[in-house]
Image (cartoon, rainbow, N blue to C red; front, top):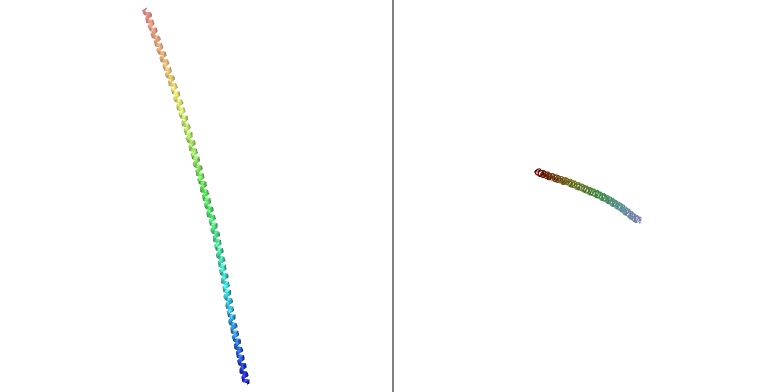
Length: 168
């Protein structure tokens, strides 16, 4: 009976040892699985955090790129506005210069026209003066011719009278 008891105790002990070994093995496996699960979860969390950081960095990069694009667009719009203003001012200056040139040309034309009118008046006055002188000269010559004719007539009458007195 003692051997049976020992055998039963040994079997019981072996069973409990095996049970404990199996339980320890199961615990180690479970702990290993938990450790691996925790590692996987930590890796997953790290990957999620890395992806979030990358996404945030990408959003920031896109925001910076959009801001830079807006700045460039504003600068381009400002440059175009400045160019347009410079072009408009240049056109306005050119228009004023052309207007001034036209006014100067009109003034020169009017001055030339006035000079020509004055020249025509001077020539007309000179022609009138010369015509008056010519008419005065003609009148003088006519009067002189009339005077000479009258003198000749007088001389002829005097000669006719002297010859008639001489004959008488």
